[in-house]
Amino acid sequence: MPGLTPTVTVEPVRDRLRAADLHDLCDAADEAIRAGGGFGWVEPPPRDVMERYWKGVLVVPERMLFVGRLDGVIAGSAQLQRPPRNNEAQAHAGTLTTSFVAPWARGHGLARRLTLAVERAAREAGLRILNLDVRETQEAAIVLYEHLGFTRWGTHPYYAQVDGKPVAGHFYFKDLTSNPQPDDTPP
Ligand SMILES: CC(C)(COP(=O)(O)OP(=O)(O)OC[C@H]1O[C@@H](n2cnc3c(N)ncnc32)[C@H](O)[C@@H]1OP(=O)(O)O)[C@@H](O)C(=O)NCCC(=O)NCCS
Image (cartoon, rainbow, N blue to C red; front, top):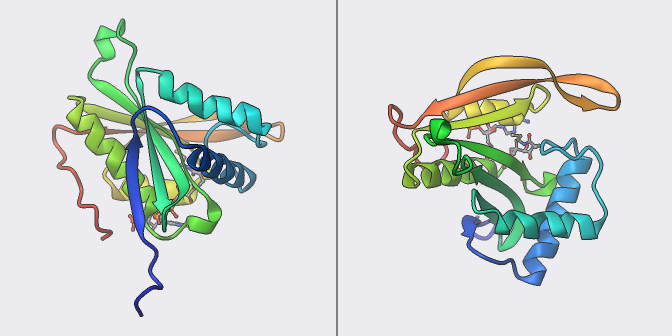
């Protein structure tokens, strides 16, 4: 039935976020952290700290921020991190990091679109390898990355610490030179 399928869009943030978008991004991140996180924070930080975090991301030259919208409202994001300029030996590899989707927006393909946008940007930047790492508890993310052709090369038993307990994490890479860019439409 028309009107029931939400519109999913993903875009890079070039220099600044409008106040309403920054607010929505902070809300989405807060909700994702409360639902089990996935990008470092175990508890949501105070709002001013969260706002400074996102503004900080935008001024780091090696970082590229992507936001995902459901019906126009920012509901998730992901980043491409390139190595610092002094790291010539790893200049070929980037990292997909800080990927999340707010719980209310899950299941509509937003994470897939965000991941593909980061992969496309990595290719456009001339990177040959895309790395990522994920807590072993993030089952949906693991399914997504494995469907998109990322190869697990290791597991760190003490990757994260949540509520005083260690949580293992998986490390993945994708060779962009021997894998074509996947289609944006879900399988
Ligand atoms: C992982 C996460 C980003 C997925 O967001 P989403 O927008 O709902 O994901 P999508 O709708 O794009 O679905 C992506 C894939 O995950 C699969 N998936 C979604 N929910 C799932 C679940 N609960 N269990 C298993 N697989 C699941 C889908 O089948 C889909 O696979 P496919 O497209 O290859 O068939 C979201 O659950 C989240 O933010 N989790 C917490 C943070 C996190 O894990 N971040 C990643 C850390 S690097």
